[in-house]
Amino acid sequence: MTILTDRYMWAAARTLPEAQRAEFDRELRERIGDATDALIEAGASPDDAERAALTELGDPAALAAHYVDRPLHLIGPRYFLAWWRLLKLLLITVLPFAAIGIAIAQAVTGATVGGIIGAVIGVGISVGVHIAFWTTLVFAILERTPAPAGRRGIDVAWTLDMLPALPEPGKASRLAELISSVVFLVVFAAAIVVQQFGVPWVPELASVPILDPALWSFWLPYFLGLIGLEILFAVAIYAWGWNWWLAAGNLVLNIAFTLPALWLFLTGQLINETALEAMRWPWGDSAPIIVTIVVLVAIGGALWDVIDGVIKTVRARGAARATA
Image 1 (cartoon, rainbow, N blue to C red):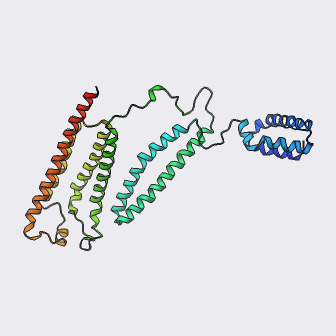
Image 2: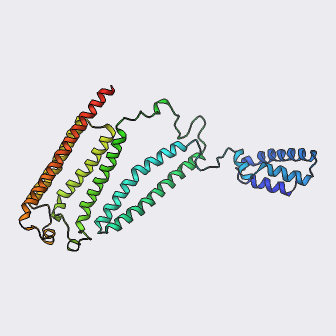
Image 3: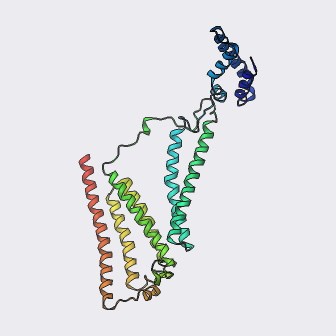
């Protein structure tokens, strides 16, 4: 053996635990010696035979890792599915709440619409990167930590009970409804908060709240709470489909939102008087007509939403009976 072999041995053994180095050194030197002798008998010179034997063994770090059964990948097949499922769950649950929280915080501090969007995007990317990095790091450490004898570690043995249920025929269409409903409700809630700082693109309303600031003592938080319940309601429809309980809940939510909003509007408590002056309200003889239109549209929209829920419930029950 020459210095070249000693260099290869040192490069391989330095990554091993001290207790395994002596045995590894003995086995590897025997392996190199046998390969070199075979090449010499085949007619190669000693130097060429040694170089060929070491080259065939490959990277000494990889050889040592294989000897102690240490993975040379970040996330291997053992924990990959557990990592992937957890990562998707965290991204789906944490990112939206982080984005909503940042948007509300930016709106309360008086940021512009562009500033709010930029902050949400920036924080969203940062949160996503942190979630992916720390989740992957934890699983990489777990993969390199041997489980006690007779135990699997954190990976769960797959069984038939883990098979997903067959998708419902109408659930794909309900997903589109869920996304559109949640987007609309989030934008509506953001508009209620942002209007407190005026409408920047309208000079007369640049710093004038549209809704009466006194409503923040109860009514605006009340409406924001109803919007949160509407989001949960949309999730429930996606998960279970329309039924008579959800149809009744839809009726209650519409009444709880429409009646107080119309009462505040008709009694002059909804719109900020300063904003009305800036808009030069009332607009002459057209004021009563506009009020009537607003009331009719609000009531008509609420009634149609309730009727639409009843129709979808009847259809869903009929489809369920037909399937049965």
